[in-house]
Length: 598
DNA sequence: GCTGATGTTGTTAGT
DNA sequence: CACTAACAACATCAG
Image 1 (spheres, protein in one colour):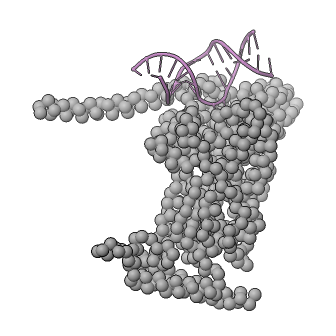
Image 2: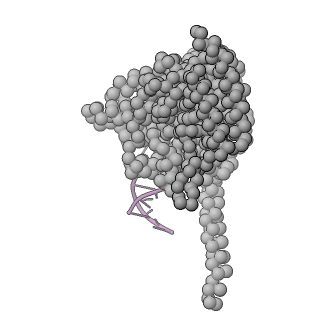
Image 3: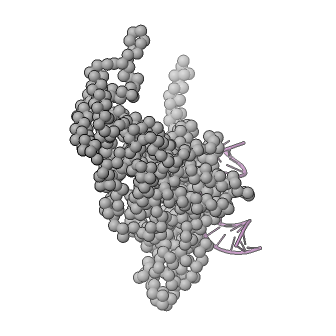
């Protein structure tokens, strides 16, 4: 307690002095020389005989002063110990987190941070449910760190404004984070790396969000990604199994986290209120965020060994009342669950099972490899999340139809199966993969002829597991814009759901207005006699919308449009190649006369 | 440049 | 209930 008084006086004073020095040194570009234990080669020079000597000068002089000051300071308080910061973005977990382990390799102070800009909350395509999931995940992370005598520092602000401050205030020497291959993240991280370099902070990054190092995968494949799943499998087979997960963090390994008295005021995990979100904006809390919950669900699902081994995605039901798949996707998206941990635990179950297990693409392992596939093409393809400028994407003349888009988004299409799915999406934040197929096909090539980019943005807002590469990739798949081309295979908004849920219990659950509709009309309520509609208090056109399109007509005309668009894409591709060829020919014909002359 | 097989998971009618 | 053929017919890839 007495020592605390001491600190209160000295810490701000020395912080102030160091701050002044640092800012001056940054300006004079001498900053690196302060790193007495981290002298980089370019600070050495060679004399004529080849002997190395340290370019000692004014910079070295200042460096020594700082070293002395640091020494004095560390005598009074351990706060000026060198600090290692781990930056949580995705990867919100303590298990299989190699970058986090790196942070603790050489360490005095350890500060795990998460950066959140509350003023940007409204501008990001993130619905209330996903915010809640994120906050729950952060809370769980903070709890787990607390058990190890550490805490999570949630810092309000933008990375490029936050880092200069904390690098100085905390005497940061090392910054670690998990590699993120999404375009916005690449851009952000490059800037942070530059900043760190300028301020003499060593950045260490590790791959653990994906099974493989996507960057190296693409490099090995001559800069491009495989365009089919099978080609991806072939490539992965050549490369071999992914790296094994690293051990879970169970102690701070001699490092310590300085937790100030006002930690909870300054660095606490925000609640929804602070983000301007009302609890009432959220749906029922069916899937809570966090590593603890992720591991619990994984263990629970993996304990059902025959279910795991016999898993076939196409045979799981999109419209069951309880999810028919694992619903681990939101946890994988935020990295509450390590994909490598899941992958190897899964292989364990396969290996110990007596009997044949299913195989990719339909197996559970196959699902993880689909994730890997879309991450890879998403990384290697320019403008992956849009049609224009995207070399993989068919150019299709989608119509601009805000009314159709809104009806679809707000579950008002008049097709109960579609509207029930969209309701589940908006309320609960998760829908089955095949349900995503049904509504995506309906919005694009199937019925409404609205661009997949709009649908992708709606999914991005409402899905707990919204994952940039997977979302864009699958929307191109379903709209037959890329990867999938059998556009004549159209999901029927009536027949598809009916084949698995004849009574329409799923529709009754999510669209209570149709609860009393007789089963024979539940998928096509507009066909119910008016008398029946009146009897059950659900008149179509008044209590529930009439279908906004005639599916058979829409399907037919859309097939024609697809056919035309495909032909045009073909000819424009041919033109591109013939243009190339003809230009080559012109070049050679221009050259040939000279050649014949010589 | 052609051929034939393949492609995560369509629909309907019929056995 | 599980399976198959016809429907109409796409792109991509290996050989």
